[in-house]
Length: 499
Image 1 (cartoon, rainbow, N blue to C red):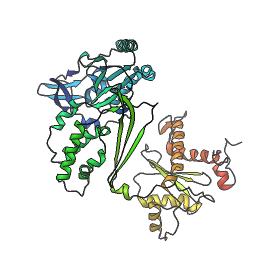
Image 2 (cartoon, rainbow, N blue to C red; image 1 turned 30 degrees about the horizontal axis):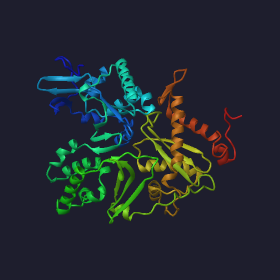
Image 3 (cartoon, rainbow, N blue to C red; image 1 turned 45 degrees about the horizontal axis):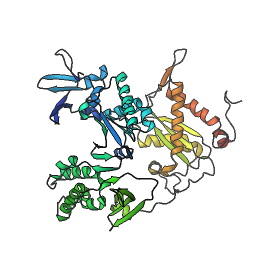
Image 4 (tube, rainbow, N blue to C red; image 1 turned 135 degrees about the vertical axis):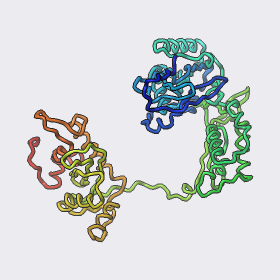
């Protein structure tokens, strides 16, 4: 499996990145520094399995098998037109990746989606967990387990996926996976993962503190009152706090290290037995709770920990305003008393004046809409005059207060004395109308903001806007059961589509 290809001397190079060599388990791994590329990459939000939820599925499993895809991401090929973006430079020349390298922004999400698609049936049947390129199979009987392994291996062959036998574990009673030691009975911390951290001295800068807290937080479910213990360390994040490792912070650091090495095994719950929930209040800084269950283990019943949970209370949460009910939206009593408005920007310049945006204004009473094209670069005065000439001159002044209105009244020399009838939560009406307008325009323009008719004339979104506005105002609205024009004016303008 060739991962990289050497670039020829005659090839033009537009992009390259430094190369890094990392070592793990005595083996080297080639890595490029793709941070600049990742900054320009659109994020793929495909969900990746949460580790605690994934491991919880192994409850009651008596046989566990783990398979690891060889070299993980390198098994996926790079499209030829994208290889130029994945070039690395070193003392031996310049190379480009032919296989997906480590360090690419969306590759974990892409690989997770691929594996979820391949093993969709197996996951739904409830005997497999997939975490990116790690596959875990579990069962309560050996016969089922052998059957599951054979079934998974038969899936690998047609799609040419390769597994690393060195990293596979077959038919185990317990397994070291993702920083945990997991069996069908309980979860424990993998002490091999924390050994190196425990040997480190007390951190002496904020970067080291953040690194330690990030690591320790991964195992917070094992530590009672984690938030309270670490509160003094988290306080160092505050802007106005001088970084200083005093006795309190040193004790907190040593306490967390001690808790990590002496953490209890967390048993899997038995949902046929009762639970015990204990809640702790640690002065004013933290809240905590632990979930326990009395189960039989080692020949005798005793209460065992299932889960610890803790939360840190900062000053804003302690002194913040209590949550209340959402205020009701005040209904307008006549047309153009209350409005919603929003801007649509980033459009292709169109029309004689090359407009690149338009303002959507919706009357909350009649649902009538006005669409006013303008330039994104227009000044506040330009926008104010646009609103004055098209809305206020024909519909009057709505009861609406915002920064825009403050500027409007200041510019026109009018004293602002209206009550606030606009709230952020009421802006959905204009946003929904924007979606409708964009959908109609793109249907007319065949998913572009300009089109040519059968006679060869070019039409822009600007020229279509009045027709879209008329169509919206003369068709029946789902809320009122009447057209906006009929509600606003008492009559409908004559249109070919109205019979």
